[in-house]
Every structure is written in structure tokens, then in C-alpha cells.
Length: 277
Picture 1 (cartoon, rainbow, N blue to C red):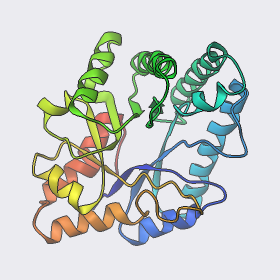
Picture 2 (cartoon, helix red, strand yellow):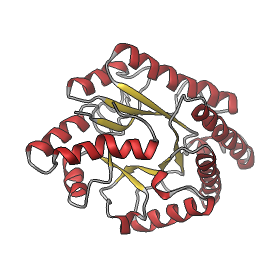
Picture 3 (tube, rainbow, N blue to C red):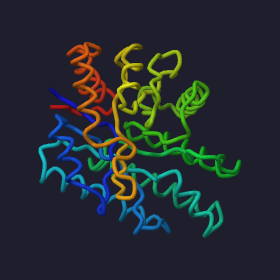
Picture 4 (cartoon, rainbow, N blue to C red):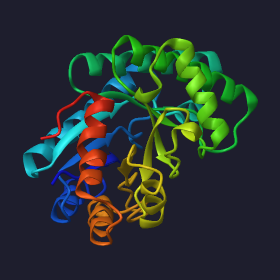
């Protein structure tokens, strides 16, 4: 059986490989390692992104060597970077750095080091109108790159509502990026196509969320958004959650074997154009 955690972070100072070993012991087989800002690499220019993205790629290599997990990587300028940078420089300078970071992320995809540009998007907390406007401009540019480099865009935004889905879908349309190649990370169980407007939901893998998601269909991915922060152990969800929730759904008869195959193999293969084997 294949079991994929679609969104997990690792940090050098966190559990790191040990977290992935927990995932594997619970039955996990594949994971998407999503880039996260590193506290010791403040973003001051595109060279900062180069160093940070490479650390994420190197961490994936370490996991591959020390566990049986199959690891895929996503990299991209984290949306909250803009908020931090504007305290040190004009917003247009910060925007330029993030745009160059988007270009660099696309190069990582081109080289086969990453399978998607992400997380990209906008702050998940209230921010000024100017911050949100510039964030949307950067996000739209990232979507254009995803279209040009034939890869998905993995989005980090505020909590998704029906209006959010509609707005993001229309943004993807405006640059020619297929909606099904827009992955909404940290997604509530909004699986119905009429409600998510064709974007691909990556649903937080609590039992409650997955029960709700599967009641609408099996067009979704599962994630923990594990942040590997020693100050917040187990947040957002622990590394063993996706396999444990999947097994529980199968035991309770809420997942069929076909559902599990769709969620953990067929869906990610379609979205990312990868092979789950």
C-alpha cells in the first residue's frame, strides 16, 4: 500500500529524519517535503533563497539515505518573507527579491530537484492592503512560472473559503495555469468541485476532516503540515498522522482500497506528474 503525506516540513534543529522514521513505522511510504524558512538564513537577497532551497533539497537527500521513504521536494519564497523584509527595505525591493526567488524555485524544478513551486501565496493572517496587493502580484507571477515550467503551484494563503477558491481559480485562469495544478495546502475538507472551483485540495489529515472529505469524493490529498518545531512538538499534526488516519478510515469502512489508491497514488501522480511506486 502507498501512503503519501503531501505536505511535511523538516528543520535541522527539529526531529528531522527521526520524524520521517515515525512516519515510516506507522505505514507511510512517500512524502512531499515542503520548503520552510530557516531561522538562521534571513532573506536579504536571492542568494539567501539559493542557500535555503539547497538546504531543503539536501535534507531530502539525507532522508532518502537514512529511511525507506520516497521523498519529493517543493521550494518557493514563503509568503510571510515579504512581511519580514518590509521592516528592513522598501516594499518594491522586497518584491524584487521574492520575484527572483520565484525564478530560482522554477530553476530547481527545471533541474529535477523539485516537483512544484511552493508554498507560495500570501500571509495567512491579517496584513495591510499594500502587503496583500503585492503578495497577490508575486503569487500571480509564481503561477505564471508554474504554467511555463509545467509544474504545480502549491499555495499557502489564509484559511480557504468558497470565495477564496473562486478568487484563486480565476487568478490561475488569468495566466493559463490549469486549475487542477493549483494545490491548496492546509485545506479544509472542501472536495466538491463546485465549491473548490477545480483547485486540488490538500486536506489536513485529522479523522474529522478526512471523514468529511471522503463523504464528498476521493479527489483530494492528505497532509500533516508537520512543522518540526521543537517549541511546538507535533504541530500542526504529528508525522505519523497520515498513515494512522488512512488505516483508521480503512478499518471503519469509510475508505475502500480504491479510495486509498486514488488519494495516495493516482491523485499525486496526476497533480505532480510523478510516479508513486
